Every structure is written in C-alpha cells, then in structure tokens.
Length: 349
Image (cartoon, rainbow, N blue to C red; front, side, top):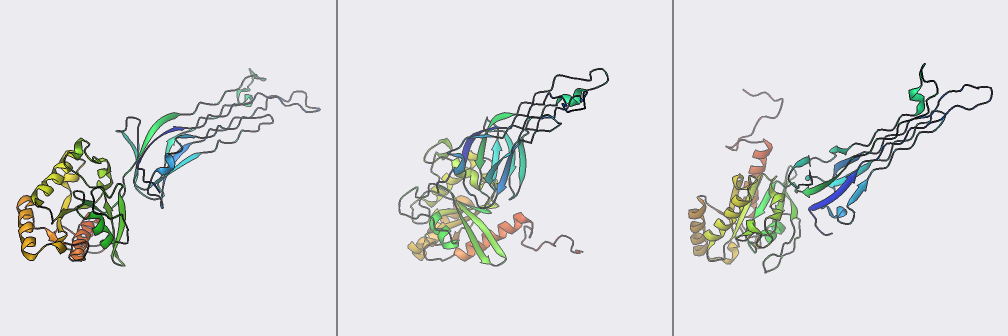
C-alpha cells in the first residue's frame, strides 16, 4: 500500500429537509386543520480515529464528502428522516487543519476518538407549527436550513515512542530490522527509505515501544534539499530521538552537526528532545578506529556515544534499553534519576 500522509478534501454537511404544508382531509371532519410535518435534520460530518490504518491513501482517490439531506415533511404530521452522516475514518495521530494548512482544528491522538466537524442543517417546520387562534389555517412552512461546507487538510503524524534520525545510509533501516520485526527495504545506496517505517520493539512481555524510521536528512533539507523535512513531523510526538552516525565515514563529527543543524532549522521542539547518540556500523571498524571515531563524536556532541551494529547485533540491546528508559520517563513511570515513581493511589512517604 502506498504511503500518503497529507490530503486535502472537501466536506459538506447535509441540508435540512423542508417542512410540509398540508391540511387534514377526512370524511366527517370538515375542519381538520393543518397537519404538515417537519423536515428532518441534515447529516453531520464526523472524523474518527481508528486502529489498523497507517496512511491516508483512502483520501487520494476521493476528495469530496457530502452528508445526506434530511427528508422532507409530509402530511398527517409525518416528520422527515434525518440525513445520513458521513464519518471520515483516519489513522491515529491524524491532524485536521484548516484550508490555510496551518491552523490545527483537531488532533486525533486516541483510537476511538470521534469529533464533529460540521453540523447538518436543521429541518424546516411544517405548517402545523404555525397554527394559532389568529391564523388557524397557515399556508406556509419553513424550508430546511443550509448545510455547512469547507475545505480541510488531513495531516498524519505517526505516533511512535522513539524516532530514528541520521544521514542517508546511516544504517537506520538495518537497525530497525535488527531491533524489531519490521522488514524495511535495505540497500547500499542513499534514500533507500522513501516513506516512514514503524517497528514494534519487544524487550519483554511488559516492555514494548514503537520506533519510527524516517527517510534520511541531508544538508539543506530544511530548504527542500533531498526529500526535505516533510517526514520529520512523524517523530514530533516521540519521547526521544536515536541519532545514528555512520562510523565508516571520514567525518563523523561533521555528519552529526549536519543533522543537528537540520533539526534546529525545522523547529517544533525536535532539537530539544532527548538524544541518544550511537556510532553505527562498528562491525566494520577496528578497535582503534572505534575509539578514534567515538572520541571525535564525543568532542562534537559533548556526550559519549553508544556503539552499535545493526548487522552483527552488537550493542543493539544496550541501545534499546537506553531508549526504553527515555520512554518510561515520558510516560511518567520513572524520574530523571531512573527511580520508580509510585503508582497512582499507592502510598508514598
């Protein structure tokens, strides 16, 4: 299935049904009076976050969604039926934006979350509503109220606990395959990954989290170079970032600074997230080269990088444990010192 994370669609709620002008006509009832029923309300437009979806591809081939018009009123005080609603089913993590593509209208962050986008028009009153001592035979009824319409953008931001960042060919997809059951495309050329991939990490039955692998960034990505920063939105919700640096390249410090510069340029708090730095592809390095590259990276970043290899699996468990600790901090299960927080309702001194 093709990955699509943005879509512009037109939505319209249903018009209300018109009221009826009718008079009771029955044998032996010469003065039956008005009996026109009300029109039904128009259908609403809803948006609902559902599980099992991870792309907006359904909105690539259908961009117009219109709720049904309410039924018209009829004689004998028969009211029209309500128009059928339209429900937009979207993946968890989808944002609904205004036509300007900047104003966030709704943020669908939980499965089952259901929100009203547009209300249907009210049904018109039938002539039975207007009878009174002055006007005992009203010959008018209200038309239904017009529905609402607007253009909106749907933008998907995948919900992952940990995001992977790095230059193209830094080994992110290989690491994701080694750390989870995900099977992303892996090849020895840049931009093998063209769309985000998600992987579920199972450290134990009670220790599970999701990693998001996004296409690699290059220098100038914030200005549109390469694939740009379009997919960085998918790691905005993550607890922290795993920054993988290819240990086989000549300038590991320069590679680190490029990614940090692009994260700063993108904004949205990505540069402020906790970063777990890792020197990748150490299976291809000698012990001396590992120490040398690690020292260069530490001098540039101010932190000691972890050593990892997605091919041999060396260092992968340690890196995942470090990531799991950051996830637990975000969830409020442990504090910054790594100490367990008391559960809600538990006594604490």
